[in-house]
Image (cartoon, rainbow, N blue to C red; front, side, top):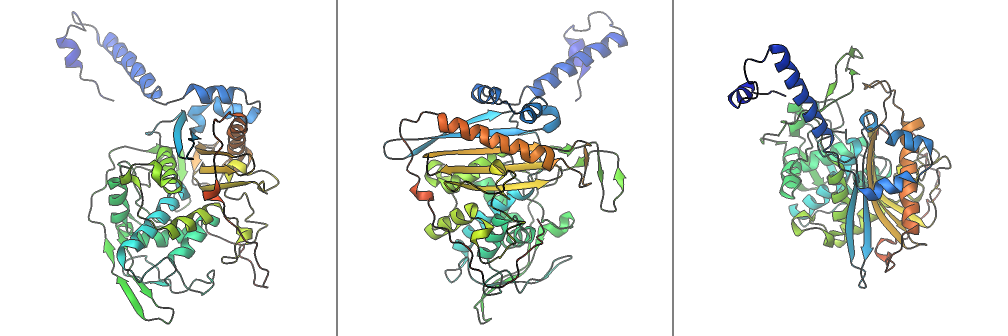
Length: 449
């Protein structure tokens, strides 16, 4: 931060020829004041302070005591219904700061799924989420995709990408949705919806900025192979706002596995705030609750499909057929992820998680059909005790997952006790899930996520 000392001189702050020593200390004092002001920008509401104060878990309290280390941000969204079952939403924040960067990782797969379905609805009335697709290569590092062995018909489609992205957080599924929607459309559309500091710039594969601006030519085809629609190679000509510098850590491992002793720079990386995530999930689960300009152009079928796979378990899915010992019920349900790995029968979590560079993030709508309880919880936490990024040495298992699980249970217990004037009717989120049919096919044991 730079101070113009001529201002202070002109207004008599220095009086008569203060020594450089004194000027230095005045500037140092002002820097401290500005630093305190910046720290104070983080928002914490009294309700969450009181709820968390009653939580006895020692690890949970240890993390909360060190916001500068764990960089956590939490939004609890309380939902209340009126006599017509219309919901109203109140956000409560804890250590929330929209300028404190965290790597959103796979959480960006959620808006990409929404945008993919929206784009399909705008392109061609012969296309839907199940229409087979073929990806060609038209630029450096682009890869082709003509077949998908995880799909029932063996062919790629937006529906199959969404299934894989939500069930186990598959990375290639995200890459293909990124290529379909295109970098330009992604960012223009999100800014148009009011998410002005939202930014998606990258696939989840090693590419430079120019390569990420180019997206593949794509063909939509009939099952027999005849062409329905061709989307040509696209290039994003728009400039992107990288004015806010985002750096994390004290060091990182580069692509050559060499240690670089400086923070890793995420200034040009994907950027999503926890508030963005909360609003995006709310906009799809409760479209009538957000302004019209923040609603996605989705059909009734789109919504039902999204609700299913935001909440469905791998054990309830035939295609893809994931190994359920590895990809268990709570695998991507961090607020309910415990040692038993099973989810309560009466609860469904509609959510998206992400994990990368020591950042663990979850945005969840929790529906308890037995106790007529619902809430949205959004949180991120940074668990990287050596503060070296990209070394695959993170504290997910011993700090991150236990903290998020305790957070989820803390809010859930509060909700069970909270008195509600009107119990919610949750029938809109009740889905009849099916158990997997055992047909002798091998299960999928390795996923790039």
